[in-house]
Length: 392
Ligand SMILES: [Zn+2]
Ligand SMILES: [Zn+2]
Image 1 (spheres, rainbow, N blue to C red):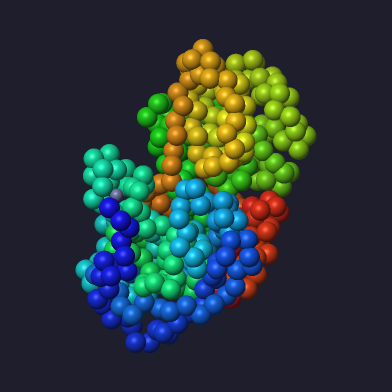
Image 2 (cartoon, helix red, strand yellow; image 1 turned 60 degrees about the horizontal axis):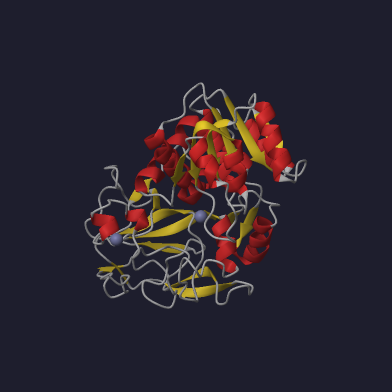
């Protein structure tokens, strides 16, 4: 089955007459070339089941850097020019016919803030038989693939407005959750929530477990926060630089291993073994995507360990000591993307833990659209943890 075309998306409802005919958006015309703010067409109409939102704020994900550099081409075909951005929160300005509630049954009305998922086809083997729409090969993916010259034009987050497709699950943002926090749920935390759901199949975190998180970027930090809420014996983070490790400690890491202090893998494995009385960690989350991190984690994991792999999405092939998987009786669990239930769980997690966890520590800088290229560079260099992007 082919991805949905603009015509198949079936635009029918009339857009509010008070809305402009065009809006501003960041546009990626060529990989590795500076992005620019351009005027982009607004959709002429809103299909039944679709929603038009005004973007409150977007946040930058590591994947945006890979997209910008053209490194996603093996996974996703980007039909340039596109509007990047897949982590964002929008406020409803037009509801398509028939939209009265979100995917959880909560009432939706104009002015509500929502998050929404990539649009799976709902008709393929992955959608119908496996019930895994996040693995659907026909998904319409916001902010990475769809050409902004084709109707409905606005399928990226770095834009004043965004079009929420009828097949995208959507969830209302609770009043207690700030838009900045909600935006980061839209890729980072929902991905983490799915990783924890996948872990639960092999055995959830117990209070006697030592949990180890590889990586202290947004995924790793959120994994620390979620693991901490499950009260394990220890949470060790392997990451850097120092500002990120400080957030890690604030969010629940009990021990840190700095990759700046210990740049070689063998010394990090030795340190983790010392920290765990020679046993290793019972649960590991690979959230870094760094080449070699998986092989390193196999050395650090305990007998009967559960190893959840979320970070790697590409990069060079690296050797793995496969025999340790056998000898240590390890469960290896992959986890790809996430569905609307994980957006919901992420928002609930933030709402319920906002008094204990200072989520603002994630957001190191604010930018407007015109500074997008600087923001991307500061994400790439790890100067920022999670840059926020506002229309102006
Ligand atoms: Zn992302
Ligand atoms: Zn499908």
